Length: 514
Image 1 (cartoon, rainbow, N blue to C red):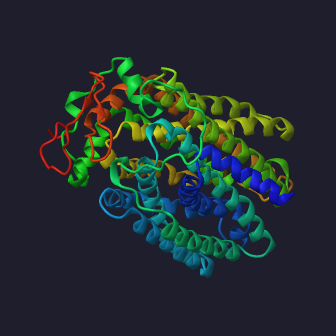
Image 2: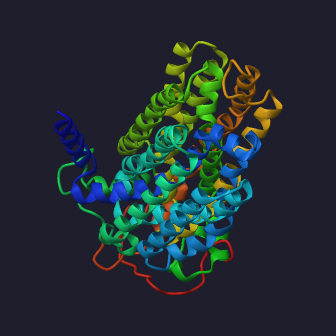
Image 3: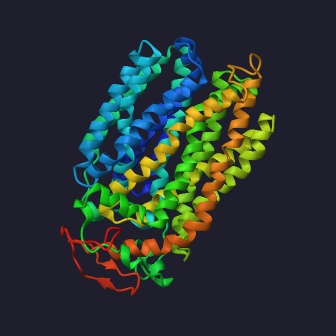
């Protein structure tokens, strides 16, 4: 029965992504994202064991989750530059191996200071994952399906968080916190080997995107085909590009400083960066202290708290898998700005559901609200990640994602420390409601205060991103040259195909520096 169930799930996944090869690529990219999420979730899940073993408090636990992200913020830009210029698979493999070595050092740490120092190197995979995964996704999959595909890839973040919260947390409670770190180190080594041997390096610009091996989800048919859905709808809406931002040559060799200024001159990109960073800020704090909150608020033991978190995590997974497909379908139905709109509504719904969930004392009432709110928080990410690729030239994807990761990490990295410090100031954090019942009050109030970033993110997307996104898509379409063996680009202002080829030239741009 178990084998039959697994085979059924595998067949469904293969059909959903379009074939065995595509599933392997999606699975490996999702695995990369799962590493960073598993790491921070593990620290939060075994907070009780670390506090007892190392003699630290909740603020110190937040600091452990913060330092790797802070290092990642400093090193992301160089990784973004490399992602646009070198072999991405070799770079990704080396980064994962460095992460595994640092995780092994964490398992061997003899003091809090040693553990803190060992986690500095963990920032390498944080820095590399964003630019490399974004660049590879854009070259493996077309714009017409990126929202849906990104949903499967981003599911890796939730799988990693679930692994850290449940498996690592339970292992720390049953054996040792060192065993949890060691298990993650072994998982990283296995993933590095799989990436190196099973993930091919795709050509730049999507010249050899992965074809559908079997029929995927039905697409809205059209005269030009589903792959032209976004350009077709931009043309149908008569959207003109920002002429001063249209690129007339290959930006691959442009400097990192030029690239950073250019991508930050795209208004939609700035809105997407800030909004998604605010969402990750909340998620980072929630991921770090979810188990401690459940234990303190409801008086649950480790296993029961982990089970509750799994239920909520399932809601986030459902949201991630649904919203990308919804936004793709809405674009094909003439809603050009569907991606920022779906992302904004997801954040707004999440905040609206979290508010009563945090105010109630009844677990049976709170859990369904948290389940649906988690679907909103998770569901915002696939359409927003796909939208960022829509508005950026393909040879700038790595550096654009690096800039985004720097801002995101700068906001996300302090979240565990801030959540921990604020919860301590508002009531402390006890190991159970019986020992320190005021501890739950501290986290309750902290989470309520931190709903504000979700509301702000929703407002940015619904009021700003919805309006700026179509023209920025048109600008990116007008900047892409026709490549050897690939289709000519669509000129969104005329609807005609252009045969201009500007590959490899280093001339002046009409970009931010003229």
